[in-house]
Length: 265
Image (cartoon, rainbow, N blue to C red; front, side, top):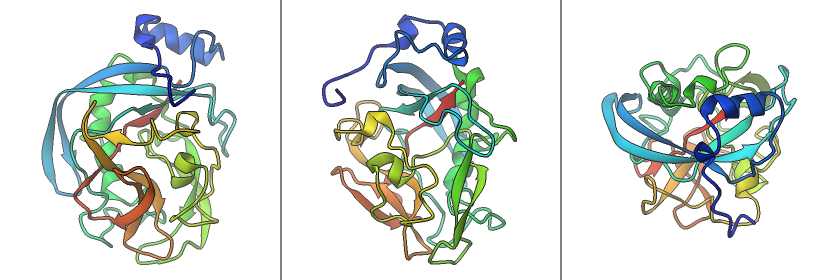
């Protein structure tokens, strides 16, 4: 049960290559939802919202397993995988955007893909490079175009307050859960077009234990961003509060962080 299970350390059972072989063959024996793989990140990365270089020093992440959540999903089907999501957050606060309505890439038609935080996590000088350098980093799913798994994303162009549709796109090698993937339903996010994947991640089901996250491994509870834009707003995103409930705030809020989430294949 998610409210009691603390998981087993998969790195004590398998090498990264052995886990890759098991997962790619669809063999999940000996692995449960909520088991974890620990990584430690040290190095610098660019925070695209502030334009600053920031540094992690022996930052520990317990990456919790969600088994085959997206198997065969998408216009390019996803293969066997473990969806890893860190138990706690990056130990630094990170803005979604530098300003409430300031897109980093206004050629995009999806608020997450156009955000500075997307770049912070996925750019070659962002956090992705630090994750790739770990023992499991070589098995991060790149997707058909190098932009991660294909996902049905809400279409909500810059300055728009309401989504007008959805479209397939790469959600990033490192991504955030949508509000629906956290809670199993839309609350503050777009009620129709944010439903591109309606599956609540297993570790989030039935308990707040894995939803309420700390700032850094074992840190004090902290607000964290969802991938979903806020319905009726051009400036806000959905989030999970440090108190453990869904809400939203301006994309330039500087008191919010993010987990590390990616597919291991």
